[in-house]
Length: 519
Image (cartoon, rainbow, N blue to C red):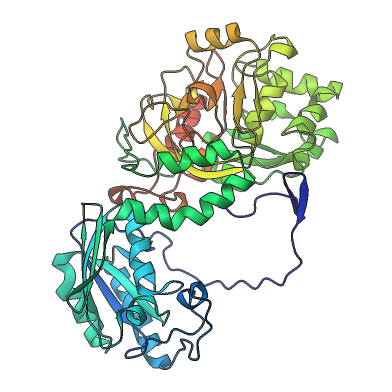
């Protein structure tokens, strides 16, 4: 998610809600290797949860979420009493992460220790079997928001983990184990304090967000999401080709085809797109529409053209309409783009806003369609901007950039407010399907094409996520492969893929390079 727009206001019903003026201070820390990060989601049922208490012997409840729910304030608030312990614990945890001894980690913060372990279970889609001990009442031990960490470790690594902590004079207390069964069992001093279905607890935890979303979006989509994620198994990726050797290419300069990375006012994906093409062996050029308008650059020198995502002209009046108008209502530019499109030695890629642009230019699925019959990308069924990590399946299609990738099922980013593929003419839709011009579809956790929200983020019929031309040279898709060609760009990956040099999406760009070299 995050703020990914140019607007400082949003419409809620008939009311305009303006962003308040506020001071925002951000802190950054350098990382030696961004691939070695620990996320809160539990990775392996049967693993051990270890608690590092950074306020040993203290369970103050002042100012906590528990106090707030009870209408209290409290007299004593959690605080840092031992900076040396915090520093030692930080160093020890960094060593554990570096030695690949930590599967998941989460700080004890809002909601206390019980909320920490539950959030880890919710994200990992698993259960817990925990045994806690202490001298304070269970309420204080479970809901205090003192400083602390919960780490997930493999049971077989526990001795090594404790060895690292002992050398740093940091105590690690075993809380219990994770389970494949979605049941949460927590005992305190031998007495059961929680025994409930994890899925039900997760639904309670999400209830406030769900009710807010019903007011801010299409309520039917909010209801659908609540139902569809209650008992989901998680995505099952499938890569039908080897990832061996799939990584950045460094060809000689003469073997680097030029590709124009096309952007306009409000575009924001040009750097990711340039990086993906460069990694595949291209020579990417940053080309702004003003460069073309003022004659500084011409498309005739390029083999490829990639129109990037973003919010050209702030999506006013609609996504990519201003961008398309810049081309269509300028005779010289219209002729330049049409000539590039028709050259047999060129390819084009339109992503997100660029995909919407290709639809408005009439470049996909093929040219010559009357404007009133032209497929285009319209407002999401949810009625709002969708920023999600979804799963797609590559279909049998002629796109040169997707050669050898048919039936791949993999995760990808979507970030759009107008991504629903609309066909004004049902007969044209049938023709597109018959000619296999749909390159990929949104799928559910079983890999089946779906219209169910949130697996399908925009409501496109049949789960259709893009279009391509019959000769395969022109590809338009709403999801962002350029934002997911490196493992560290991905929101979620199977454990075995996290240290790969590249994800399967890099093959798209490799395919384009190979096609250029063959031509």
